[in-house]
Length: 154
Image 1 (cartoon, one colour):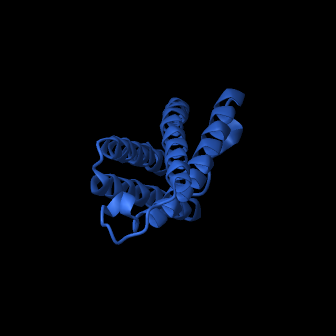
Image 2 (tube, rainbow, N blue to C red):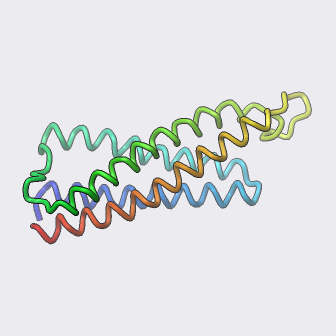
């Protein structure tokens, strides 16, 4: 197993953590455990940022993959995976920004002196979070296929 495969094995485990904390956060908010939801989503975000930093370092140190040895189907799976990840990043960033706005409102703090969050902000936060989590789950599934193909080609 070479250094690139070791990196991608770590990346798959890392994405599993992103999905796991995302699901944990979704379940927490459904149970009205707002602080656990916030902590879970912050942890999921941490692992996303950790991957992005590690990926840049990997590209600089180890270089990219030779897609010329990949089948057309494997490349298509990679492109679908990349589109899912970009969508996850955009939706997750939107959910994060909206969540920051919601954090100081009465809907979250339960404090009578705080302003009430607009329902449309809550709805947009919920939708963005669901899109991000769905893309993370599908991204994890496509990453399993990508890594499987890489291991088979090694």
